[in-house]
Image (cartoon, rainbow, N blue to C red; front, side, top):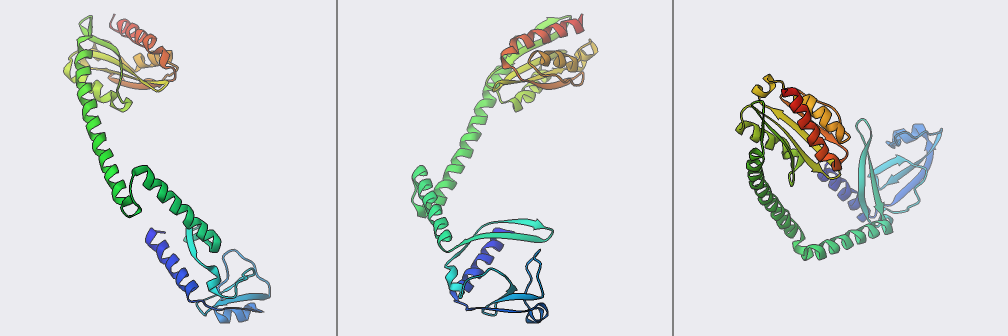
Length: 274
């Protein structure tokens, strides 16, 4: 159900509560109850004699447990959840009376706590939160631009660290201060700027690691296979897997083995180009 639909249900119930509808209860046969238009509750079983509850001619149903004499005794009705229980059937859970009052009090306490945290009044809390979310988005954009700028400088440094092995430019490097999701973007940038090359980049991801190997077509023709490089390098870090000759990615469980993994990657590349 949508928020608007739930609101409509809540308003309708509270409307009938405020109307102070008298509740009439009688026992009769199932046949008579049907003639009265009583609604049977889903999943319930009934005998030959049933209890019919009529609330101001607005609601009439079969029920065995109601104890109110007037709808006003409900006090207040507040929906707290709804979910599906069968195809086309929704279950609404709500609180009433003292429980509803407690629910409102808890909500009020949370609103006051939120106001205190963001330094706002209840009247402008939403505007203050919207401003903070907008500010956070702008900060995230600026941070991303800074990361991209730093990554560009890192790419230049990484390219300058290349080695030549049998005519192929080889890079095996740990990359720091980079989002693991940006590792491939950096690899593409390096590969596009460095002809006849193979590169292995590893970055720390918490206590784990992300590994990437990429190679140009010329390097692949010379014998490079990124899948085999990553398979052996990742094993050092507690990973595995593989990939295609041109590109392979994998993860490892042990970030303390990054240097050893880079050494293994270079050994594999030297063997492939030998």
